[in-house]
Image (cartoon, rainbow, N blue to C red):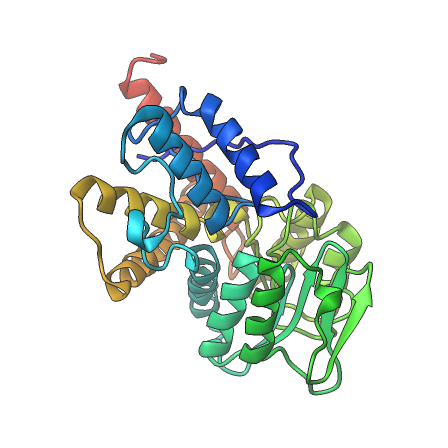
Length: 343
């Protein structure tokens, strides 16, 4: 079983050389290595931590502990990494929303307009998977502004690949010159600039959808919003979504919290740990299928728990917020009881 925790450092990698970043990673792991292990705590990357940093951290751990083990996830494929791990959070998010579409009777992704925030790992792969499934992606963003489609424009695979290249160099989205009908809006998030969209996927950072932006999405007819980022919506925004869900039943906007919708990254970290323990590597198809199964189970569990614990009106979509929160709490509480932590 995998628990959860967050930690990090106040080191800002922007503007730093590879050598400076490597020295920081080595110093950080020199202390952290005393507290982690393949069967103790297994860190994974998050904001500002990619394959380069995981490599520096893993190398430092190996030197400090004289062990080659699955102590970090997101590793390189030649030294214990898993296929689909970089794509997992974005892909998993899209798979989860696919179950929302199906449950609500809204069909598939084909022809849907999708607004996405962020331009890092999660946003990139969510956008690519949406395009693969027939949707039209109309935005990306970063901390300095948003890239938004105008007229009949849309984000293309070529746009995303080019943005991947500039983000590896830690450059801003403003440095990208789009070839199609895309407009860069400095200092903005996409939600109030994308017009009518079917699906909104916050994939940048915490509290990136405000109450005003939630109201704007509702007013523009958005039907589904799911977080690829952790706690992407403010509490006030969530209340807007939940109030609409209760008031408008099956025609309302339906919100999925990050703890359920973005669990694909953690899930494939678990699959990477399993492969490390077994000293083998699964194919891309095997990992992708396991990810799909995990996202379906997460969705189904949220639905079932919401129905079991939350009263709802006829035709009302189940609360994925309540269902996911309660399901997580019940699982932990039951395990603690069985371990004798409370009785």
